[in-house]
Length: 88
Image 1 (tube, rainbow, N blue to C red):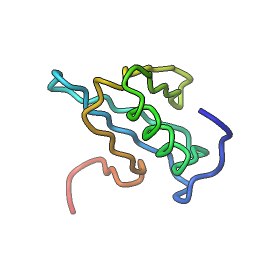
Image 2: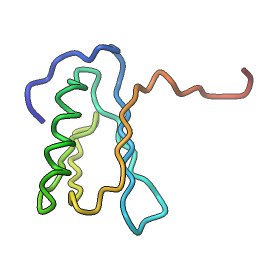
Image 3: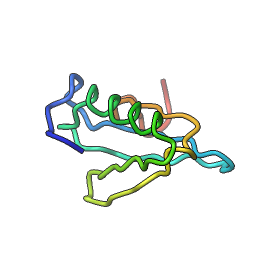
Image 4: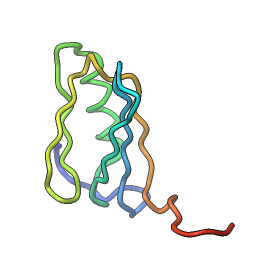
């Protein structure tokens, strides 16, 4: 990914990617310095190029590549939406 700029949320960014012909989705935790608008642009560019590959590097430094023609959806959100435990 390009230049890292602090996101508007100042929280780690979750990316969920649906892959065609797979019942499971890929879930990646990106660094809180991820530029969310830049990420959206990269997703749009990759999906527009069916022969392309969308690359991500997660918080632990692992790199994942997804063939653009296999992407069925991409959901971008923040990690602070997740709660652990029981209760409201």
